[in-house]
Length: 427
Image (tube, rainbow, N blue to C red; front, side, top):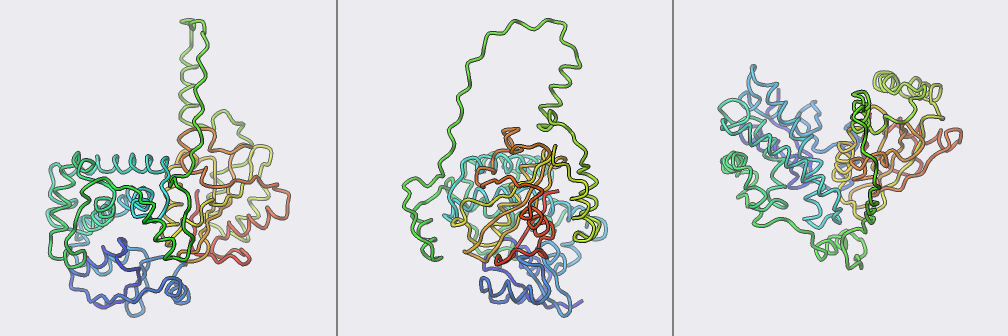
């Protein structure tokens, strides 16, 4: 295996920093290619990399994308965890990316002035980060490092995911409940190998806040118009006042256990009251995941789609002027998917980022059980959907057939003059 390679990534990209730190530990000779927004991305696609996957890496004939895979390639045996702990190392790296990265972007980007704040998304992000840190703090109570007695890629990956949160969003008061995490984090960032890449890490001295001036400055630098709105926050829908509860006669003590069981089931599954229909969502997802999409999965969908009990929807992100780097737009979708966990059994969606850095849009195609907007079935599904326009499609129309084919095929779909950049499938 070659001990030299080239890394493609934007400057100071937190996903690439774990690769650079791993190379600093192992002695791997890593060269950073000059990153030019749009141009570098196009060059990587021509080289055979998936669209929008950064960081990317070349070493001889070897081509890799995604940070954890590249970090493992450039690391030494100790960082990988050795033969006995490699699975534990991968476990923490993957868990951290799923737990901290989506909410981190929703919380940190407004603090940097990159996007406008969305109160609902930020509160959901804070809750998810807190849950992750609570687990991590408990786990580190009796440990110096995450896996074994020495630093591994598990520590490197999790620390790099937390770095933007600790530097830009979480002040001392918000970090204080996680003393074990803070002790572990400070130990890592003061290691020579970390310092070589990150420099002196300065943590936030107060909770991060949105700056309208900073937001306008960044928009002007990227060619956008100054935001004349005095209020930075998007107008939030007025909360419906709870109707006064009617006096109801006390329930008879004869309420059955079956009634209580049914109520709990409905609380757990917001789709429980909807007719089941004939479409087998699990079987469709197996076909989509394992068979050729164009010749098998799409015909299967149309042959089995149940328009009486399922509906097709097209959506577009309402604030494209807020979108900056492509990976941030992709993370926005990832965060939305995580918060829609309870829809997995009943819905399928394809979301796509089009365009290039500082000039992109997001749209998608969904179908789910029921004829109305699925998000209105439960409050915990409503964090993100109001940031999109939603249009119900007629499954018999030519438009629906074209959209299904394009969005199901994803990066191989025909989107007309729209340039596919990144995409995610909800299944």
